[in-house]
Image (cartoon, rainbow, N blue to C red; front, top):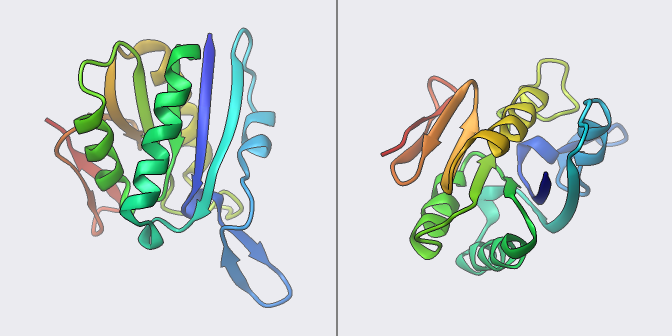
Length: 167
């Protein structure tokens, strides 16, 4: 299977700076996550689109993500986008609207806690997104916390600390 994973930043990619105690989107942790998994017959191309907290994303950033997805589709059996959960629904709605009639699954996932935290959900969500990439038909989806949510209609439930909805 040929998979493209686009990284954009968000909580999943936040890294801890032990000198000043800050969390920042300065690099992707994707290679570390993938290195901990057994992924036979999966050929992954990683494209770092940006390193941003999704609350700081602009419409131009969403257009850059859309362009990166479009560029990946011809050579991919699926596309996974690692994204911050705060505005993942906005980006998913853009992708759903602009990529109508997809034959390929496009899956957005993220985490409520950074990968570097002991109680992270990042590894689970990336693993679920990788499995969903093999199983889903064409369309745009959010995959995390044991859920597959088709766009449109996905929202973040801050109280439950997860994504909900889907059409």
